[in-house]
Length: 392
Image (cartoon, rainbow, N blue to C red):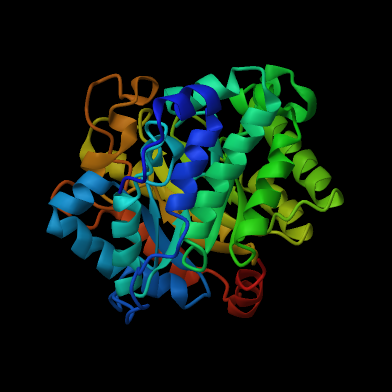
């Protein structure tokens, strides 16, 4: 979907102002359809999760979604919540100034609503997913332009999808203690342009535009055992404590859970981490679960056993925490996993990763069995989860 294109003078002279035209042109509500009857099957992952007050879902790769009816049928049967893989990121929606493209996001949302599924928004402020024109604004040294860009971007998305998104990942991957910035914040274009206050600002902007959406801080590399992960967990907890003390309108913490076979898993450390977050009154979501199987043997059966075992140990620990609401995998279908194409994650033997609950023939794998068993054996915290889900 393309909004009115600004003049060349507006683009050159205004920068972020050009984007404001695009945002306001698309701000009116769109007809995404009524919430349909739940589509998931009684023997699927969502049904098992829902019995304990949880929701299961996945990221939607728009090309596969559009081209493969088998993928859509799988999502209908197994999922109760969806999130766009890339279609709601700044680079996907506003690839060029004056262009506001929401067709893929709108299509995903209509599908979710027709199947009675919840929808998450991902992600508003991230150091990646920045189109060149936005990078130029953030690097300009003009804080006012940078703030206007953030305000116009968050405002346009929040207004367009107001009332249709359960939770927005407001900021994504913002902590790297090794960058030696105050508070452990990652060195990003947003931090350079606006200073550490950009985090608080983003949450307030979302709350101003869509007070009913849960506001999430989504983070990676905080689940397993390593000294550098301990540092990250400590920085995350300090950051959350500071935000709450300052009255920042955050309601959830998102734990990505890109787990890797190359690191050990310490149930005790993860349990304590989640307990501290829950003790702050925040809900928790597992937002991007998959398993990097590089350290597992090439034999498929052995590899699948390793993936299933790590999945089960992780979920058994995480789902013991009543504040955990949602579990999403980063796609459902092995051939689409990012782990097989990202250079640092490729297996040394060149084999494709078996990171997700369904194989190349759309068959349930041992990882699916592990997830289903973890949901069925999880404590039933439905009342607590219902209360937290209603807290935006």
